[in-house]
Amino acid sequence: MTTTTAAPTPPPVSEAAPVSAPRRRANPWKRRAPLLPALLFTIAVTQVPFLVTVFYSFQSWNLVRPGSQHFVGVQNYVDVFADSQFRGAMLNTVLLTVVCVFVSMLLGLGLALLLDRKFVGRSVVRTLIITPFLILPAAGALLWKTTMFDPTYGLLNVGFGGNTDWLSEFPLASVMTQVVWQWTPFMTLLILAGLQGQSKEVLEAAQVDGAGRWRTFASITLPQLSRYLQLAALLGAIYIVNSFDAIYLMTQGGPGTASTNLPFYIYQRAFEGFDVGQSSAMGVIVVVLTLVVATFALRLMFRTFEVSGGVK
Amino acid sequence: MRLGRVSLTAFTWLVAILFVFPLVWMVLTAFKQEADAYTDPPKLFFSPTLEQFAGVFERGFLPYLANSGFVTVLSTLAVLVLGIPAAYALSIAPVKGTGNALGFFLSTKMLPIVAAIIPLYVISQNVQLLDNVWALVILYTAMNLPLAVWMMRSFFLEVPREMIEAGRVDGATLPTLLSRIILPVVAPGIAATALICVIFSWTEFFYAINLTAARAGTVPVFLSGFITSEGLYWAQLSAAALLASLPVMIVGWIAQNHLVRGLSMGAVK
Image (tube, rainbow over all chains, first blue to last red; front, side, top):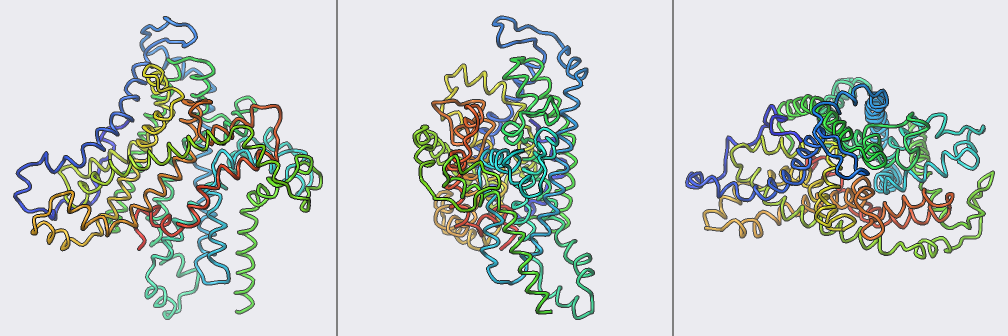
């Protein structure tokens, strides 16, 4: 959902220096025409269903009881806030997103630093490292569930000994492992792009001035990387907060609700419980929360891009 | 110093191999008999067989593959058809409120898809689009369009303004301007954008599992069939996972550099 209010600070668009000749300004609709199909399509497919969700959230409606639909005001919201499973799922979502984004960025930074030098077989190593991003997440999830985490024949137990049932004892951590594995290549690629975009002269100058490796990294490389890191964090968070594949395929949210996140919980309530009203109310709450976080993130992102001269 | 370099290289290789090891293991398992797939200790050496791949096709893999191909190609084309003019209007001939439009596009990516799934399900049901590939084409187009507009806009900004001015002075209309002057310059950027749309469409799971079944199911839906069946057949599952991922894997390997440019939204030359 989200209207344009989510974009508080417009990015540094080159509105100030339009290429067009003045005569073109006479007909603004002609200029807008190329934008409209994409804009209208996006509004129709992404905003309209959300408005319908808002409408459903004020209804009591169970799909298995046809004709049960009626207006109940905010009752669904009251029920959802009283639901401890919903709060648990919310906590799991936050944990999953924060931990996965942070860990995969840290690993990505490490891998990118290793890759940012000339060595034998560098392109092969890079190819190896991006591959987990190219595999189907569904395939990755099933692969980890079976060949890695299986208590009897899984490679983790074979490798480290013991017979831990990873998916029942550490369900959320297991899911996180798979998600981190999947997203680390993405982070690596983005950060590597940032590393390779650094100016060589500045780095050499620092060396000439006698700055040590760590010093150079901390005071030159990291600041230059910051907008890549932010882009990586933002894009990573957008996708990881919606994680569904790994949970659906690896743990089904269990045991109990130990690894249930919001997308999976809403899915369960809607498609297994057939409770349209309550699951819609949850959807609305998730969107409002996301909106708050996103507005903050967007503001931050636009500010960074402005400082660094905009993404070109 | 030299020894340090060598050991750092060795370390890099070791990390990379450990990192892809689950995938290496998947490839090995795909060529095993089921009996060789579950052994303790795991078998590194075995007589390879193609039996599992044959089994995957016997389970009816092809229709799912065809659905995935159809949905991916059509939604990516639709993204380009809608997105290229939009990116043009947000970069080369920026309209009023460009910043708001860009913010709007990006903000739709922050809408959790789960918040719209119920109406989408009900609407699809009412217009006979449930378990229909066209529903996925429409949704994947909308899913990828915002990011594509952002990426392509940043590539469009790199087109030298003098070239466009010159074209305008010569009286070129918008279609001519796009096809003769702008597109040749931004072609690599558009390729990078298309590649990322292909990856996201091919791997999408949530819409596919909720809105399609046997008729319009895509490859991820086929894979999810492995958890509901009697137990897990690891070797066959590995073969299916490999086959399902192979198209995107190959495309991604070939176009690595494009991928990097696309992901960094054109920030890297």
